[in-house]
Length: 512
Image 1: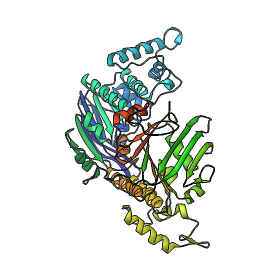
Image 2: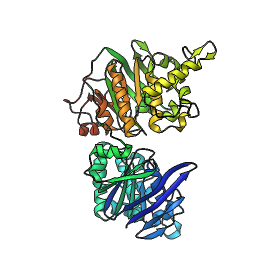
Image 3: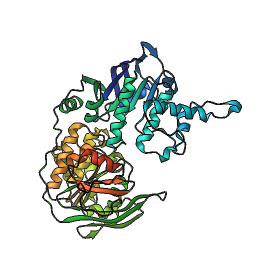
Image 4: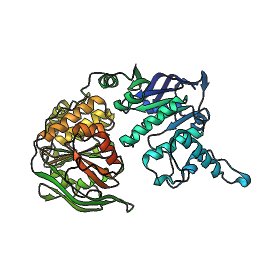
């Protein structure tokens, strides 16, 4: 089935998310839609899937104009979508999830679960998915859950398959398996749209590439294009993709974490007896699939988790049990993984956001008075130093692009006297050009002798920045290995497998 999008335009108030976009996807083709977060890729596919209604333009399947009032219409027309965040019910079986919304019944009005089970087995056998129809979703690895999503789409005879950032929650090995599945589906004649911002994956699997930027199609490319060429199309200028750093100059142990345990609000053990240390002048990267305790670990260091046991010592001073304010005042800088939730106040100006950590002390406050002249001078200096693209320091930070918002957080945190810098997902939702800048500043912080902890689900980022790599799985440390450890080894560790002895470095609290 051939898919054509003609002049698709979608507005949200004054924001034009999609601006007269044309796209054609042929049967038996993997067509990659490449662009940074916020480029409009997912919005376009949500229009195709009936989740949004286009303000202008047409959707055609095999030259016939379509009108989708909702996802049900899109599925009936042969369109399937595999979302980044799976649409599965954990306590249901695979067969029950696949039949949900398309329930068939037998005599007496009873659900025909046997028919759904047979359908799952038939599709699983045909594509070699190896999925048990009777398995509970909550018991399946993430990679297998994604196969269930694909089976759901195929069970409705989908001829056009949309994969929306499908590798965000996968290990490298699971990503490779998904690429193989996509090629297999393509070879059966399916038209596949693959949405991503990861250049490595694009070049590996795409037959054609369309690049979007700020809601518009800005060019097409072949898979033979270099990473630099693709990045330039995405950003609109040449980008340095390699992080240049010298070997670290190591100082004494600065951060020592011992027996750290975190229990979440519903009583689940999310960080389990974790111990490690970080020396001044090194970057320790914490890797793992999202949801394996990394978030809670960094929040525990910052005093943001209420149910914590164990010790967190920085330069001989215990941080565990202290308030967030005291930990920040002790010289801990922090980039949270969700800048809008924990890092910025959207309705405050850039200048106001730059003083958030120091809003009660000199030189920003004298007596009971805010020192507006000092704040303005400071803000202008940091906007220039950190290359924040803005018309004014009085611009509300919520109006900036994601990359410029992240630079404001970075400028605020790195302009204090630091003894530890913790960066959680420092380049999430950030354009390639801003990634280049942020990585340089993180390395410069390390080179100033400050211990740095970087948490990232992006292996490319981990490999680029890390002097050592700590891998977490289900709340425990699988191992700590040197920077430069091969991706296949890291991928196996992210799935819970201990590293080969020759790759491991001395550590405590490691999964047996």
